[in-house]
Every structure is written in C-alpha cells, then in structure tokens.
Image 1: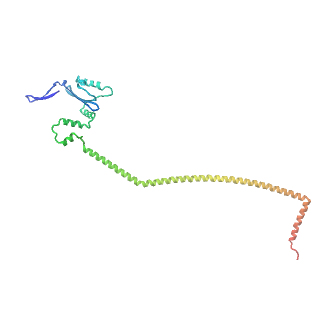
Image 2 (image 1 turned 120 degrees about the vertical axis):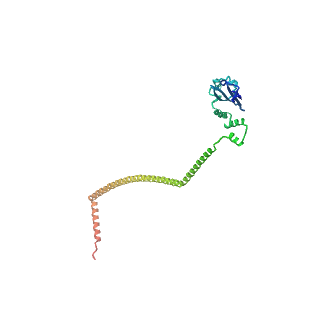
Image 3 (image 1 turned 45 degrees about the vertical axis):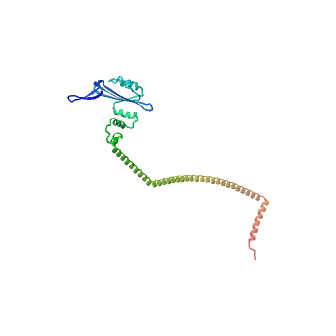
Length: 289
C-alpha cells in the first residue's frame, strides 16, 4: 500500500500514511532475474494483493527471465495474470514456472535452484541486510552462520551406535572362540566320517568277494562235475570195450581149445603136457637111500 510515514492526531492516535489507500486496488510485485556464466536464467518473484480484505501471497520461480511490464500486466485481482503466465510458460510436460503458496517451500526451492549449501544462507543474508549492532561475534556465527544441531541427540545416537558395534564385536569374538573350541570336534567328526566311508567301502568289497567266491565255487564245482562225468563216461566206455575184448579173447580161447581137442596133434600135445606135469611131480619126490 506504500506506507511512508505516520502522523499523530490531537487525540493521541497514530495514523499510518499510505500512497495507496484503497486496498482492493493495491498490489506489489517483487521480481529479480539471475543469470550465471553458462547463461542459465532464473527469476524469483513474489506477488502480494488483497482479496476481500485478506492478504494474498504468491511465490514463484521461473527458469527464464520474466518482466513485470510484459508478463504480469495488466494485473487483476481475479488471478487472470497467473492463468496467463501458465498458458504461456507451462504448456505441455515442461513447466518453466513453479508456484508456491508457502514461504518455507519457496525458500527451500530457492536454495536448490541457486545452488546454496543450506537454508542458513538466506537467514544470514536477512541478518546482514538489517544488521545494526553486531554484538558478540561468536554468538552471531553460531546462530546465523552455522547449521543448528542437537548435539545431545547426536551424542546419544553415536553412543548407541558404539554400544551396538561393541556388542557386535563381542559376539564376533565369542563366535570365533566357539569355532576355535569346536575345531577339534570338527576334525574328529571328519575323521569319523572318513572311517565310516572306508568301512562301508570295505563291507561292499567283502560282500562282492563273498558273492564272487560263491559264484566261483559253483562254477568250479559245476566244471569239476562235468569233467568227472565225462571221465566216468570214458571209463565206462573203456570198461565196456575191455569187457568186449575179454569176451572176444575167451571166445577165441574156447574156440582154440575146441580145435585143439578135436585135432590129434593137439590131443598129443595135451598128453605131453600132462606127462610133463607128472614127471615134475616125480622129480620133487625124495629118492630112496
């Protein structure tokens, strides 16, 4: 409204003097353009006006250069100026103008867009602009140049974290000691499993050998039986052949005897054989003295 001073009336009442007395027509547009070395443009602006007696505030950041005369005028209280800016710069998916209803959101976005390290930079700027008495330099730096921190909470958090780490270290050392104590058990268990495997292998070998022995014995006995049966068969054949030969010889002897008995020479020969036997008997008798 352009307040520029105050006057005191005779009754003791203080009155503020304004350039614009009509609230329904008063408005303010604050705008600043920034450009960096890469020629990137940013415009910060604030708009204030009354609507039905209430103060309305609009904060905005444009990613291009805006001008009051060309972009905000003609200005009206029905927000046609705002719709006009949106139609011109926020068409499609690319939004060139950002709007904010709260000063805190506007300040945080301003810090990001201008590349400030923290919101504390704005607080420091406001203090240095209106500074009259510096006072204690340490307090000024601590309050306005350093980020506020809850050191007690940070300390408690670090203490809790340290306790957690110490517990983890003790648990690790305990586990390592348990592993060291259990190592001989593991070695004995490994040896026991190896012996079990060896025993199982030996048992399988024994079973295989027993089966092979039984199979071999059966095969050898079967072969021996077959060989003996073949030998017996051969012997029986030989006995049969010998019996037939003997029978033939007996038959030949009988035939020969018959022939001898029927032949005179044979009868004489038989008589001579008998005489020979008689003479031998006489020869063996003792002679008279």
